[in-house]
Image 1: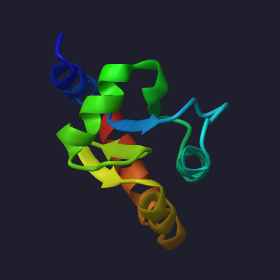
Image 2: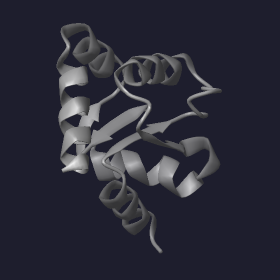
Image 3: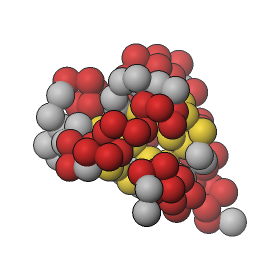
Length: 108
């Protein structure tokens, strides 16, 4: 499977997906740690991919997304953004609203 197909598969099968360095319990960069903190405050129901464990994803996702940095938050196959955007959306309540709306769709 090509990296692009793998990315598409991951996005198709995970409504809230965070590409990050490390894991939520052990983030390996400050930006990933801050993104996880904001996202976890909204819900624990999200999937993460440790880009340090998958070279192809680490290299190809920035091209796929047209977004050069990590972490990257995707909700319903749409790129939301990186750490600064995640934090700002959390600060305004927009992230909680988006996460809640997405999770409610899954339940119905």
